[in-house]
Amino acid sequence: MCRSIHPLHNFEPPATNDEVEAAALQYVRKISGTTRPSAANREAFDEAVRAVAEATRELLDRLVTTAAPRDREIEAAKARARAAQRYAPGR
Image 1 (cartoon, one colour):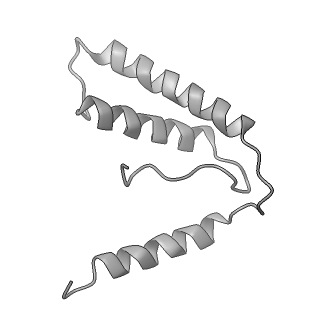
Image 2: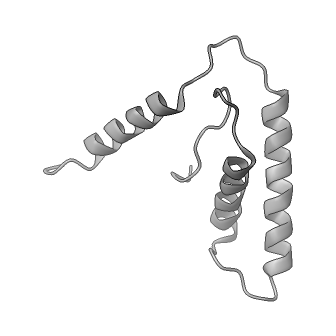
């Protein structure tokens, strides 16, 4: 999975529209193989980002869980620790 796309479900406060759109953009970039589409493909690219963002928001709104909401700061600290381990000198 693309490392730039992060879980968005079960956070308090819920994922923002900016977070949903950023994830959609990263997804479309990944599957299209481009970060900057040509002028000929711009409309299709932008429409795909809008559609993925809409589907993502609908999914997040409909998911249910009994787990306690996650804290963004704690999750970010865990990610930093994993990155430090992954990219530690001598590995």
